Length: 465
Image (tube, rainbow, N blue to C red):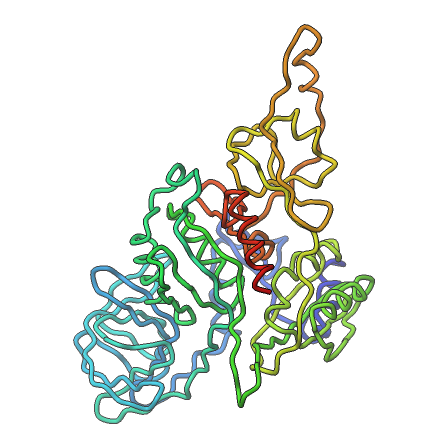
């Protein structure tokens, strides 16, 4: 009980919110009643309490109104409109008006109607006000459009849909491990999957580039793009991701960038660290409000400042920070934000990493891979302790002679490698690096795998600058 009261206190709740009807029972034994000491024979008391306490739904009178709030897609029926019917009723083969977000009205005919039951859908002939349903047969609709009466269409207020604020390059996997772990590896397969995603993911944009093997994907942030990549990975796709970049605009001749409202709930002891990290990323604090033993901090911060921020804050606050952010507007560019300081450790050749080599070179930095891992030339295997990249050979085995025994390798102790999640890897890479994503592994690599090519490209950039 003390834990429950502490939770209510931290959430800013009051004692009146604790005053609610309580029913005791056991789902396993099939009874509910007013007293846990006296089991009842059935669920009658629970049903009577629900009817007595929970108010009946309010049904508005009027013509049909259903705003499309979500999309689905079927290869058999095409796009599917999903929403809650606010007024009226819908039937199979019923002609309706589709009011677009820009005010245009189109005539359509509903083919099939489904309601949601458990984890699936159940086909029905009619739905009434209050039902959440899926409708097929409509064409060229978007989220925010409204299904209305054929003769007297009355649309609901328009929904605001945020525009993409971040882009990321999606490319086919061209590493030496190409095709070893995934089923869908060609550019055609990746293109089809991305185009299919745009059918039901309205905030996503896909743009083809000059290369048939690369696509620019625009989304609402790291999490939005990360969910798509993780879904594709689980479906058996192999692909490579470039560094995420925010979308800049020129408004009235001024270079502008997306600004987000960031809210952080954190214990008071860690609030200073949060303010420090956000300030380094051009964030400005708007408010600081105590809530029990927690503090709610609100900032304005550039979208590019959020890249990599979550992991840093979780580390600095021992995992106790709770973050949320939402798009505010495009505002003038805030200036440069410090990026990653340390360089990376890069594998010199293809092979299997050995404990002998990793032990000898462990003072050069922190590893991202365990011993006996299959690696290739150009793969990022760790973080350098200094600025600048360093090429290492981790595949050299101990030379065994009468004086050198193999047994000593068994006693080699290395620090546990840092294992990146997908989002952490996307946030970590720089402009000349890729994240290689397969169903089984997440690897970091340089875009140019050959060391000599990287040096020539670097010299060329220095000459131009």
